[in-house]
Amino acid sequence: MSAQAAAAPGQATATRRLADLAKTIRSKNAGVDRITFDIIFEDRDSYELVKRSKVLTRETVSKLYGFDPARITDFVEYDPALAIKFTILRQKPSGSAGDADIFGA
Image 1 (spheres, helix red, strand yellow):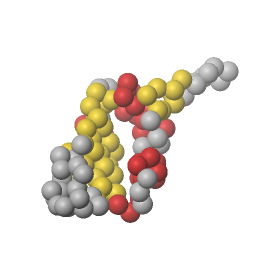
Image 2 (cartoon, rainbow, N blue to C red; image 1 turned 180 degrees about the horizontal axis):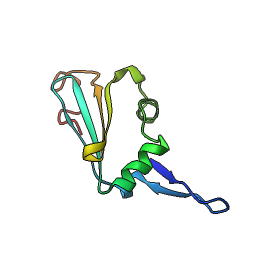
Image 3 (cartoon, one colour; image 1 turned 90 degrees about the vertical axis):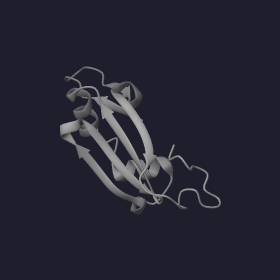
Image 4 (spheres, rainbow, N blue to C red; image 1 turned 135 degrees about the vertical axis):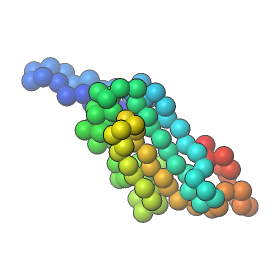
């Protein structure tokens, strides 16, 4: 994923990778039937750039991972922590037969 920085008229637009803008990108179990993703930014400018770009929304996340947006139970832009967080429903409960990702990674 990448976000584009707004440029002054007549200047090129810069594209930056999310991995270069965020200090932490992680996933973790959120109970037996959910996985939570946290994208935490080092500074307000990077956070606001990604937020304004709309590169991370329910729709873009579900398209990226190839699932129905209805599987996203929560999607939060949390300004005090400079973080974007979302939670998805697992297809199978954690640790059940056929679960390929017991650790939420």
